[in-house]
Image (cartoon, rainbow, N blue to C red; front, side, top):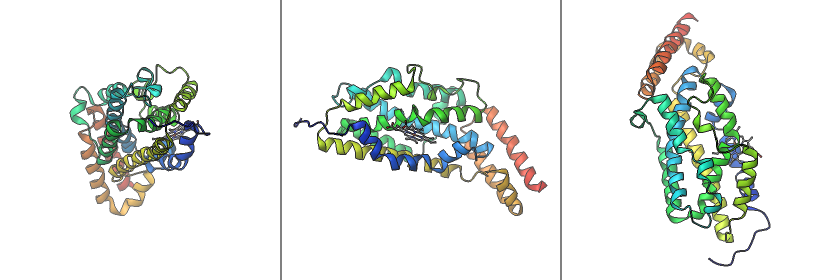
Length: 279
Ligand code: HEM
């Protein structure tokens, strides 16, 4: 490797600054805003976390495979924390909780997720030093805003503590803030040439962009579902179309749903359609 010159600014600060706007964009995707504001219908509340879990499974499968393969690479070893951070097994547990034992056959994975996973594999093969950008984007995000999303998911799905929520829980991390400090200091210890450093910063922006594309595609797949009771009222004059849209959404999500959720959704659609007629 060519001579390494330690940059004046630490990598953890540079990466945070480089992805500041991307973070705002990710936070403001419709899917994330829906989560935060609770402006989603019962149907969306149920389907979006489940669809998101399927995508997350494919993303972490590729990320953790690339990290494991490159565990001893000099730019990966300092930020390799499989015991503390690995998510794949946790997501598998959550998927089994929601879909039952045959969850693998029921998974739906949108094209944007496959593109993200493909990029992770390319990076693992051709540029292992860029893995720090992807690991940072996902794991530090999970330990930050992800913790809030976990509480919202628990509340919106009415889950008992821990049930179907393994993804959000990090038993090997007693203090997310202290762990993030350790992680940043490990990032800062990675020796990179200036060219590699700017490649890592660019890759972090790409990582956020890939996440935004996944959220947007998931949101699009949910957009045929009626949003709120108000919208249902506005659609009063088009009740037939509303009914069709709700049924179509129910049908398309039904292969993903455990039976009790499907029953619940059925009840919801009947109530929603009833409300349209009532107003
Ligand atoms: C509802 C959406 C989100 C909320 C409310 C949120 C909120 C936050 C908060 C409060 C922090 C802590 C900032 C700090 O410690 O200075 C943070 C950090 C972070 N978030 Fe998010 N976030 C969201 C979505 C995302 C997404 C979608 C990603 C990436 C896929 C992401 C990646 C990160 C990363 C990498 C950090 C660490 C920043 C650093 O300390 O360098 N966040 N987020």
